[in-house]
Amino acid sequence: GSEPSDQWREYRGAPTGTDRECRGWRQEAALRLLNNNLDPEVAEKPEELVVYGGTGRAARSWDAYDAICDELRDLGNDETLLVQSGKPVGRFKTHKRAPRVLIANSNLVGKWDDWEHFHELEAKGLIMYGQMTAGSWAYIGTQGIIQGTYETLAELANKNYPDSDGLRGKIVVTGGLGGMGGAQPLAVTMNHGVCIAAEVDATRIDRRIETGYCQAKTDDLDEAIERAEDAADAGEPYSVGVHMNAADMLEAMLDRGFVPHVVTDQTSAHDELEGYYPSGYTVAEADRLREEEPDRYVAESLATMDRHVDAILELQDQGAIAFEYGNNIRGQVAEHCDRENAFDYPGFVPAYIRPLFCRGKGPFRWVALSGDPTDIHRTDEAIKELFPEKGHLHRWIDLAQKQVEFQGLPARVCWLGYQTSEAPQETGSRTDGSDDASADDSGGLTERARFALRINELVAAGEISAPIVVTRDHLDAGSVASPNRETEAMADGSDAIADWPILNALLNCAAGADIVSVHDGGGVGIGNAIHANNHVVLDGSDLAAETARRVFTTDPGTGVIRHVDAGYEEALAEAQESAVHIPMESR
Ligand code: NAD
Image (cartoon, rainbow, N blue to C red):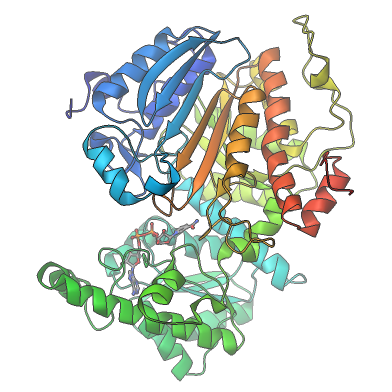
């Protein structure tokens, strides 16, 4: 059926509370997360099963959605459900430590791996676009984005201004205050900096101001620069949205001899027809041009992008730190505008995220299945108690508590790495007579494992009212191959090799994660990326402790080995410090 199912209408969000419908919490977690993805507060178009990112879906059809929910309710604690592109296709008896759900979305054989073949197969009802967290039931709304932006800018500050207090006194210039880009001004001010953001659509600036993501709005660039400079001189955080085209704004800055500390952009340049706005038009005029003369729109849009990139390069020449924020504006003008120097400024992953990936550090998130915000607040306390030395992390948790609203099931995002502690593992006892000696003698616990084990204890002790599920973005240290984004410019040229995310998924199955998935095409489109995801349900049991200890070692561990293999010194240092065994490294 193409009409939303009665089951979904009944839920309209995840089931909550401490009683479950399924035969175990691991199945119940899958049921709640699937429905959380389709919560009207979380998803873009839940009536069409679309969660986010264009057409990223949670299930292939409403019939498939109903079947998944029914299967999950009936699924035994020693069974595994198989989901192929959003449709349940099989169920096998496995064993209690095996994953409960395995998912493969949007994958095609190499030669057929493009949108054209995908759309043909989609029209026949055979495949679904899973994006990243949509089809793997791990999306949590905007709070996932703000934190990534915050971390990227924090890393930029660390790297370029090691003696400063984050971005204090620095001016960041950008464009685009849309769904994701709107997080930029807040991420800058959270890092103490000043942000000037160009946005052609005044209503978008208003929206960011209403929701506390941006402080001021103006049509007057001179006024914006003056206020920004005053704030930067005073060391005060400040953000202003300037109502104008980003390319025009950067050129006007060059004319005035104003060079910011940092320049980037998050207009939707990946789409020259329906994302980016050409110079010389109001939004209404441009929207009319798009309707009436789409070819002319595209030509003008690309011409503006060309000027936009040229201005970024010029600002870079004059001393600004420039980076692309994943909107493919460099690729667009390199392909369509004959510009040879477009890639003369870096993408955000090689510039700021890769050093974190080398350490196995990446974004992971946890969700309170109870639906009770106090459960997340208890986890906030726990993470601060566990890592008293991490000032940056404390700051993030405090800011998130104050400034980031929950959407759907309460959740939190943070970045932790591999980095094993000195202390031997003592958390989580093996009282089930387990014969599995290896669970206890892996040396030290990773940061992520320490956190997960602590949460598991709190669930066991009843301090948290229902299980917590830990999952993550597909953008993580060892789980993605995406040559235009996450694996751009790898040191050894291995950008397009997709063995790594597949090994990541296989290993996490072996380690007993509760849901494991492998997708094609997230973020950058079909044929451009392969990436994997996993979930671990912390229900307070010994089994959950064992699983957490394993998965939160194997998962960030694949990030470390992947970057050691590519020749990154920082990854090698992490491997040595944390005793990660890498077979051919010493030869
Ligand atoms: P969106 O479409 O919601 O917002 C884009 C905004 O840019 C709109 O408000 C639009 O009015 C404005 N805009 C378009 N052209 C402009 C121009 N020339 N000058 C000034 N304003 C202009 O998109 P979004 O969700 O905010 O994402 C923005 C882009 O950033 C996308 O290309 C996305 O793929 C990319 N992105 C990538 C990452 C990543 O790689 N991790 C993260 C966030 C965003």
